[in-house]
Image (cartoon, rainbow, N blue to C red; front, side, top):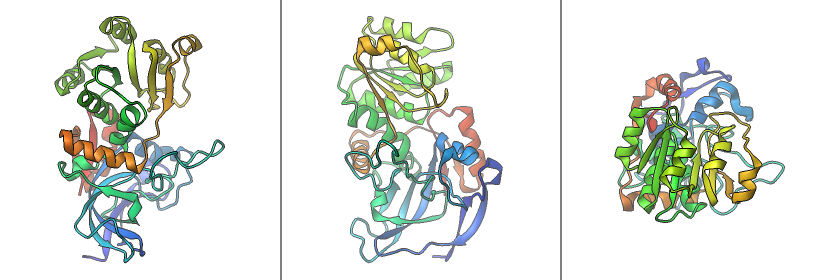
Length: 340
């Protein structure tokens, strides 16, 4: 193995500063694992951090991206969870192994890869063994790399926190990575999935993937359509991807005692909505910030059992990282992945 590697990094916030640098392969400590990266899955958050920093305390040179799959190359002498040759994926929030998330009311924890912690858009990474889980046996490297953030977010919302059950009516907003994982997971449970989108082509693809209904939110009132499709029952669970004032529409569409998982910020970082449906329907309004390691391990097990295949819109090469990040602005159907 060469002592040198390549990685994408930036010396300052701003997308045009991102470039490939050559650096030494990192050393490992007693409890660390050296992993050769095989694929990195991008999230829109990665682009936001590069462009604005998102108010995070970044360390420069900053390496972006949080989600990767790879192969263990070497382990520290105290490592017990992995051996060289094992296939692994990263965890989004290192240190959050199970149970309540770290932090407190004044300062919620948000120490993630590709943020406070170094990112993974690098040929090799060296992290503590607790920062990885075993990759699914049924997925290739690119597919496995999509699980740590997008896959786990949908799983945490619907299964870990949402306790989804057969027959529930689930509304999924859009056709991005989290949305399509939500569609597939809900369908596997036996729920009835309704997908909203502004694209007729993407709605057709979502129906082919297993959605029961597709609503074009540009040509029809999606709330009224949900009422019609459910006999006025409403949605038992809504994956609220848009955020902003769109939350008000979700409050209208949700069923009494239903659940809204607030995940995205595409419509803005300030959410709003009428208080009447919130009081009269008593829905659970939950914010989802990905999830813990144990839930990711549960998701990996489920993926292998049910044969879930993540949807990848396009695969890029390592040198095409800028093009891959630009693809996020075009609204991919599923995930954008960089293969090494």
